[in-house]
Length: 331
Image (cartoon, rainbow, N blue to C red; front, side):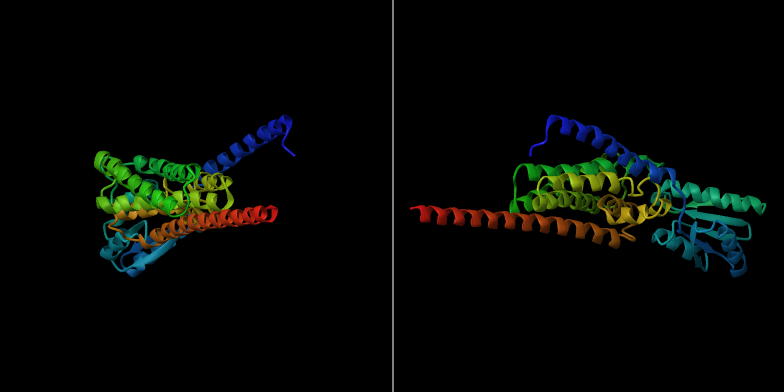
C-alpha cells in the first residue's frame, strides 16, 4: 500500500531529528572525549633515569603505551618510523622531548604539555625537538585535516554518478578507476603543487589520494549494485557519519574514545588519512596497513559492482527466456 501524505509527513518529521542527533553524536562525541589512550610514547636514556621517567609518565593510567629505547638515536628512529608519536630522552641537562607534529599537531602539543608538567614537578625544563615537522605552509595541520571531507565527498559522488547513469559491470569499474585516478591527480595538484600542504613524492601522494577515493566510490557503487539505490545512502552514511569523525585526522586514532579510533582506521577516511601522512611526511613508514585496508575496500567494492552487473544480466536473460516461452505457448 502506498504511503499516504500524512505518513510521509510523519516519516520526515521523525527521521530528520534522528539523523541530526546521529550526526551530532558522531562528530561531537569524539571531539568532546579527546584524550590519550595507550598513545605510543618512547622513553630513552640511562636505565635508572629512564625507568624513573617511565614511572612518572605511567601515572596517567592508560594514557601511554611506553616503549623503551637505549639512546636518543634509537628514539629518533622510532619517531621517524611512526612506531611512537614522540619520545622523552633523559639527559644530564634535563629531559628532551622528541615530537613529530606531522603525525598530528594536536598530539605533539599534548605531549609537550604532559612532559612539561612532569619536568616542572621535578624542577627542570624540557627542550623540545620536532623531528618530523608539519610544512611551513600548514603549521597547524588545518589544511591537511580539511582535505578529508572533500576526498570522501568525491568518492561518494563518483559512486553515485556511476549508479545513477546506469553503468554496470566492466564499464562501471572502468569509470570508477578513471574517476578515482583523476581525483588523485587533481587533489595532489591542489594540496602539493599549489598549497604546499603535502611534501612527499608527488605521484605516490596522487596514488594514495586516488586509492582513498576508489575505496569510497567502489563501496558506494558496489552496495548500490547489490541492493539497489538504497545502497548509495547506506554506504554514504557510513563514510560521512562514521568514517570522517572517526578518522582521527585532527588528532590521532589513539586520542579518540574507543571503539571510535579502531573503527575509524578500518574505514576509508581513516585509513586514507593515515596512508597520506605516511607517504607525504614519513617516506612511507607504516604505510602498509592502511594501504591494504583501502585496497580491500576497493577490491570488494569493484567486485560487488561486477557481481551486481552479472546478476542483473542473468535476471534479464531469465526474464527474456520466460517471456519467449510464454509467447511460444500462446502461439
